[in-house]
Length: 100
Image (cartoon, rainbow, N blue to C red; front, top):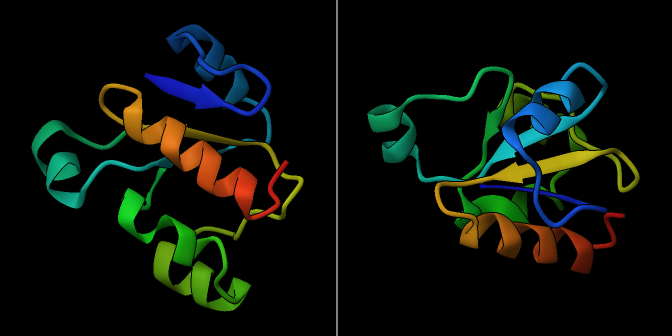
């Protein structure tokens, strides 16, 4: 299940189309889930428990830790997880930190 800013949920095809644009895809599953079930191509794994801290990091530290440019508050970001619960939480965390 996937969550995007304007649309609460996205289909797989919508995500594939979005990924052709400049969207940051954050997978908020735990690391063991990624190891067990596989990584989503062109996504960055930031477990939900680390997300609030990660989104407030210094951009240099973010890049070092996640090997990805830190999103600005206006950059398009998509969150995904296994069932949709954590990605919805991730979306509200990001919104509460001022991400549009």
